[in-house]
Length: 577
Image 1 (cartoon, rainbow, N blue to C red):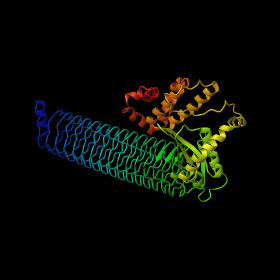
Image 2 (tube, rainbow, N blue to C red; image 1 turned 90 degrees about the horizontal axis):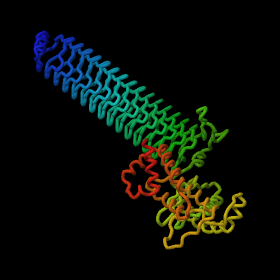
Image 3 (cartoon, rainbow, N blue to C red; image 1 turned 180 degrees about the vertical axis):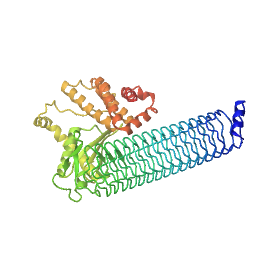
């Protein structure tokens, strides 16, 4: 068909040009809005600056066609053949391009915002500086595509093939790339804040200097990936594979690396402050000069890891084995003003072989559980632990947690070194009754030596179970009331930072009920202590926050009607504001 005949027919109102042969036709600048070119042959046609908004080109052949600066907004190009075509600066906003063939096409600075390109073929396509915000690219083939500085914010690239694609400085904010193939792709300086890369293949990907703050990379494969200098604040790498990945100088502040595999990874000078490293594999990893300020290392595998010059200020460690760690010295403090680690340890020398492990040992065998059938006499227990420590000069015992049930009281201890837990438990429970009685017999004298004014000897920890048939307890004298109140507040504060939401409600309610029976007001505890402590913990501990919000949906109404339940509800409301 001759271009002028086409134009004349269009002017007369004819819109159906399906299966027409317009190969090589010059349609530059034509206004063919809403025309139907289904199955038409437009091979090497000139459609530059043409206006085809809402046009139908399903299955049309536009191989090597010139569509520069054309407008195809809202057009239907499903199954169209556009390989080798020049679509630079084209307007394809909200266009339909499902399963279209755009291999080797030129789409520089094209506007494809909101376009549907699901399962489209875009291998080796040039999309530099293109606009693909909110575009649908699920399952699309983009192997070796050039997407440098492209805008893919909010785009759906789930299961897309981006193997060896160039995405340097691309904007992928909030984009979804679940299960996407980014093997050996380049994303230098890319912007991936809050992007979802769950189970994505990022083997040997280059993400140096990229921003992945709050991104989700759960179960993603980042083996041998280059993330040097990347910004990974609050990113989630749960169960991710980072074997031998380059993470030098990265910012992993408060990142979640639980159950991630970082075997042999390079984490020199990485900032892991506040990061979660529960059940993380860091064997043979290089953590030289890394920052572990307030990091959480629980059951972390550090076999063969290099930790020389790490800053470990306020780190939280549980069940760790440092026996195979390589470390010459560490820094135990951090100067917030000068932003540098301080207090080298050991000062003026290096650790002797095995000394670092002995000093910071916190393995599984060092956990001791003490079960009591009656309320714990804390003063008696403290002196019992002091007696045990005196018997073992290098031993140090710390109370980690306290839990109550209907018929028992559990005190959890942590030792500073490997111990025989069963033997030590027997020893503590064996001498505890005797030490308690000896202390009570001379309590006033002992407290006097310490400069503590004390009332006559009374139990210092409240009994949480009370026989309803027993006579009501006598009104406590003022000093004892103060002592009881302060002791219960300390217990509640400890419970609020160590136990799960369901345990908190039960344990704290028992303590409040006890104070009420003693005639001591709990209004300040309900109003200030409980809610504030829960809010602070939830802001600091993302895992606890998620557990709290999830638990809220399954709680019986009877729990919410309790005093503690109401305080928890207020705390949750504050977190959501």
